[in-house]
Length: 379
Image 1 (tube, helix red, strand yellow):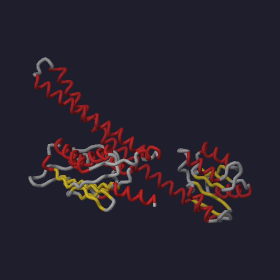
Image 2 (image 1 turned 90 degrees about the vertical axis):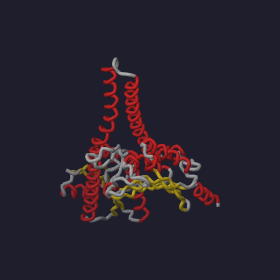
Image 3 (image 1 turned 30 degrees about the vertical axis):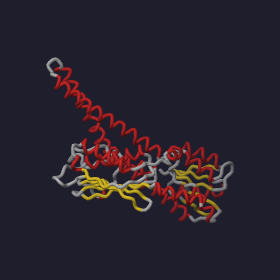
Image 4 (image 1 turned 60 degrees about the horizontal axis):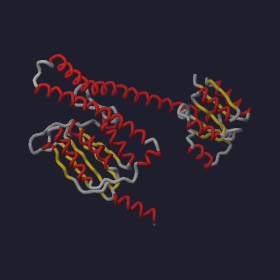
């Protein structure tokens, strides 16, 4: 049964609301002042709250604010009742996060329509969240065990070889086994670091103080940084000839550390999800340009591409067609890039066509844009 909390200090109105909702099949709990209403909401966790604005001890705005400050009650639908029907009063309630505002006097139909609308919306959001959670669970189930198991298996197998055949192995064989352990351990270390980095960035985007600390940093001559990183990645994949660079000098409003992180993730993905092409055909193009006050970087590969639905649902831990394609990952690369872009007022856009490849477009403000912004603030 759906539980509705009614907070109303006028006993006659409270009685009407209680009787009306009880007849409609709701489980109704009541409170006659804001403080008791707040305590009841925190204890009972109702499915919906109807609250008068003018209440003793704590007014309706105060109740709503405190409920929204508490993670356990912040999503409970909240409907204001008030004789103050002015636009400013309604706006104040909506600005605080109220879901609806019903002026007194109201009809039975108005009240029930508002309640049902908010309950339906909450149900829809809950279903969407459940679907997203299930998708995340499936993605984690597919991505994490594979990404962790592969390097661990390499380390374990190499260690077993050393333990069983150490007396008969020559120096070259020992060196090869040692290299295998080192490569697997490095892959495992990089994976853990990537998880930690994503968590740090995700927290920063939700913490205003941490968010603010990242501002005011500039990468000088971004083209030099990108050229060096792109060539290193191409060499690591033994595909130096697959890389084509078209870069312009630019001072970009993002720290060199985080721009380097973003660049490595995007270009590494471009090589990871594409294959070597015939001679004279570059499979990865990295191109930068300045468009007005915005610096733009495009990383284009000629891999298998993605469908519009796959692009739309891209996110952390999301990978597609894992059963069909071995070369996969955790999906954290693009998610990390998006978090960095968000912190520095940039954007990340994905354009993809199945069978033709994917282009990731990154934008950041330039130093010129910063100077223009400063000049406008001083004028």
